[in-house]
Length: 130
Image 1 (cartoon, helix red, strand yellow):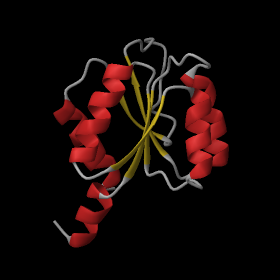
Image 2 (cartoon, rainbow, N blue to C red; image 1 turned 180 degrees about the vertical axis):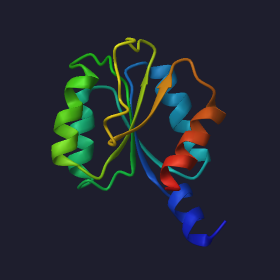
Image 3 (cartoon, rainbow, N blue to C red; image 1 turned 30 degrees about the horizontal axis):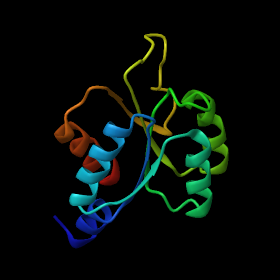
């Protein structure tokens, strides 16, 4: 691994958007142990505030589709317009079969809950190593 790759993958800013506290805290702790700077949001409005506070400096967002204040799907068009370089992973326990993300380069992966933390790590390494 090159020093650049290690720096990019291990020093990345990741935003977790999840309303289930136990999942949010477990993943946050895991990613911080991996060397990432992790931000956590439990609502869509929190997510938008963090993105604005970070001036678009977030490298990767894990976005739950079912949030208490809005539907994660409704956020995607706004994210595409306001943060076109943002990389997003959809993670959800309820993924309708009719949802297709292949035609949206903005969506880098879809992760169904429950998931394995090593699977999460592989997705992050693949996306941030691009």
